[in-house]
Length: 121
Image 1 (tube, rainbow, N blue to C red):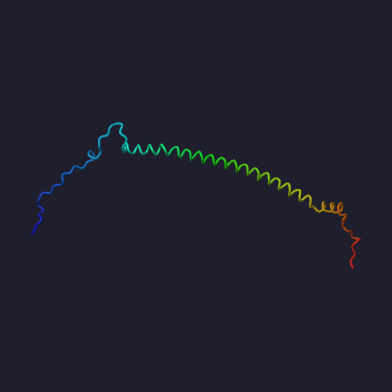
Image 2: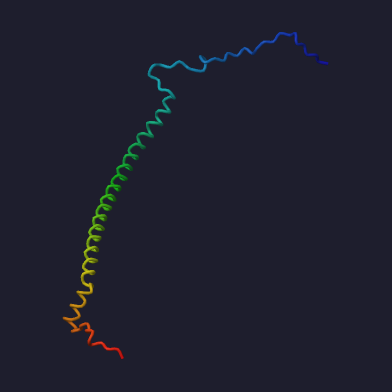
């Protein structure tokens, strides 16, 4: 039978856990994260930055060309609207009742009958 005694001495494990043991001493020019991390970052920068800049150049060029096309189309639309207004005004002048009477009299010799000419039966 095993009896547990609480009167025995209790010692903690003798393992030194401290900040000084985990951090190695660095020299003044050492990079944080190590040289491998910064080599990877350099490679990404070497290939990524020109790629992003060329994509930016392409998209800005396309944007400018579309902007110019939109401006040209807006000018064309404005001219067409002005021409449509002129045509509507010309149409209203041509189909006015006075103008129709004059054209019918001149070309077809049609005149409105006078009140004396119409008789009820």
